[in-house]
Length: 398
Ligand code: LMR
Image (spheres, rainbow, N blue to C red):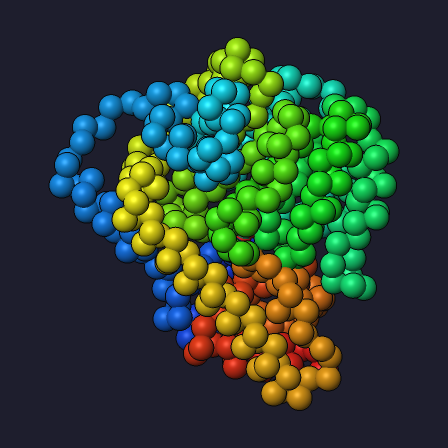
């Protein structure tokens, strides 16, 4: 049965890890995948997570099945972070949350549920978007198209183009929006622009699906929730996928959630029953460990404070690497102005490096980046910064 099976292409992001791991050069640097490394090049185990893990180990809880939608304590904590703990929507019972296998798992549950709900709707993603958005929604059976987003000339958002496109869509179209720290460009909408997007979604009857994978990496927990809060204040129904991979440094534990904001408590009950069907036929119910750690940290004032301080530390270090990279490239005598890197938000920079330049960085320097020119600033440190700047100088000069 496998004789005619073709080799599938490597994943554009995770496939880079495979090539990076096989590279034997000691100077290699992986700027491909969106993972935060500390200044020693290590993925941190956050002190708040470690404390929660030690307490859990000591308590030695049994490992029964979780509810299909996961732990109630975890799901409550997710809603509080997204919507604010005093949200009337939460108090009214209008919000459902299902623990998911990372942000990707949340998107997949949402996509599969939407396919049952609106089989003929089209899905629109930003141009460009995280590579997996298209693949995920296509694999759920949707036709996926782009809406204008990035303006290479200004290195900002082509908001007029985006708005005009959204205004032209059919009612019921599903719009995937990056709630903050746009991946891959690092260019976000202003608060006023978010309000305009909300208004267009209302006027056109669009179905917003916000992807929130980097809450806390731009300005802070509440500041980064501005888009989610604008939608929640609007009275619209919408979807949110969220992830703790980056903000809790729990990548491999696959800790995410799908939340759906409905019109009433009664509606929420029906929607949850359908989301549970999707989950049951995919993986039955989610794993316990990662979600339990997040819930423990978020429900303890002391651990939560510790976590917020550690998250701010990650955010500040990435900012320092942005400034450091711009200065280091300048010090290499590169005429091209890279100061835009400092304005971009979150983990990534859309550098403008071409696919050929990215290829040269890999071949000549062992520096891996996504072929679109996206680099992960969170993989830079005080030891590899100059080496990376030298490589960028070499490939952009010649
Ligand atoms: C990324 O964009 O690099 C991350 O979100 C990791 C992933 O799953 O692609």
